[in-house]
Amino acid sequence: MSKFLEECFEQMNHGEVVVSYKGSINADVIADTLGLVETKLEDSEIHNSIKKKLYNVLVEGLQNLYHHVDMPKDLIPQEKLESNFGIFIISKLPDAFRISTGNFVQHSRIDDIKEKIDKINSLSSEELKDFYKFVLNNQKFSEKGGGGLGLIDIARKTGNKLDYKFFKYNDEYNFFILTVYINF
Amino acid sequence: MELISIEGTPKTPTVNMNPETGVVAIKGRSIPENSIEFYKPIVDWLEEYAKAPHPKTVVNVQLEYFNTSSSKCILDVFKKLEMLKKDQNEVVINWYYEEDDEDMLEAGEDYESIIKVPFKMIQIVD
Image 1 (cartoon, each protein chain N blue to C red):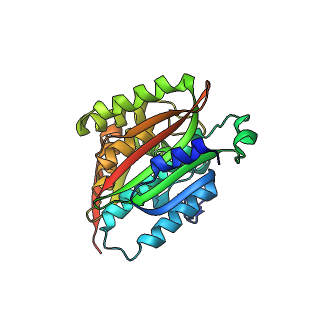
Image 2 (cartoon, one colour):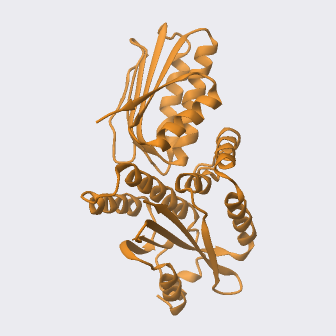
Image 3 (tube, chains in turn green, cyan):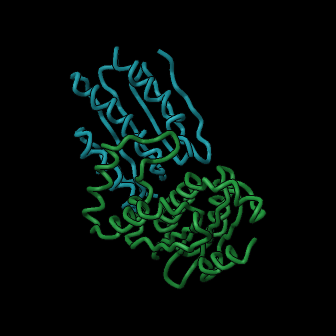
C-alpha cells in the first residue's frame, strides 16, 4: 500500500479496534465481518438494542461502501491493489462504537456527495424521519443500491452527524472517508 | 396456488406463505446485497394470491433488522396488502419487535403511515 493510503488508514484508525480491513469489498467480506463483530460482542455488557443498532448501521455502511467501490482501473497496478478496494475500521471508544469506511471517488462526484451529507446533517430527527419516508416511498431504487436511503438511515439510527473527509489522491481521484458513531 | 416456504440464511429471512390459510410469515434478518432478487417471488406470489385470496389474510412480520435495500421491497409487499384490503378483504398485519428495540418499532410505524393499513404492534418479551 502506498504512503498515501497508509496515511488515509491512519486517519481512520482510532480507539480499540474491533475489526480493520483493507482490500476487496464483496458480499462475503461483509457477511464475515458481521459474523466476526457479533462473535466479539457476544459476551460484552453492551445492551442488546445497541448491538442490534451497531449491526444494522454496520451492514448499511459496508453495503454502501460495496456499492461505491467502483475504483479506477489504472489505480490497481499503480497501488498494487485488489479490485473493488476499500478500507473499513470498526472500533470501540469509551462511549461509542466508531465505523469508518474509505473508498476512491472521482472529483466530479465530490459536490454531490457533500451536498447529500450536508443536507442530512442539517436535518432534525423529525425531519430525517420524514425525509426517509419520502425517499422510501417516492424514489426509484436501482438494482444495486437502496436509492440513497443508506446514509439517511445511518443518520437516523445513530442520532449523530455523519463525519466525512476527502483526501486528494491525484488530479482525478480523491479518497473519501466517512465516519459514523453509535453511542452506548 | 403454491405454498411458499423459504428457509432463512444469515442474510435473508425465513418466509412462509400459505394460500389455504391466508397466513404469511416473514421472520429473521433481511440484509442481502440484492434484495430485489430475493423479494420478487414474494411480491409476485401476493399479486397472484390477490386474485382469489383467503377471506382473512394474516401477515406476521418479525424482523431482527433489515437493510435499506430490503426496505423498499418490504414496502412493495405491504403495497400489495394495501390493495388486497382496498378490494374489501380482511387484512391483519402483525409487526413484531423486541423489547427496547425502538428502531424496529419505528420502522413499523413508518410503514403503517405510508400504506394506511393499521398494524398491530407486538412486543416480544424474553
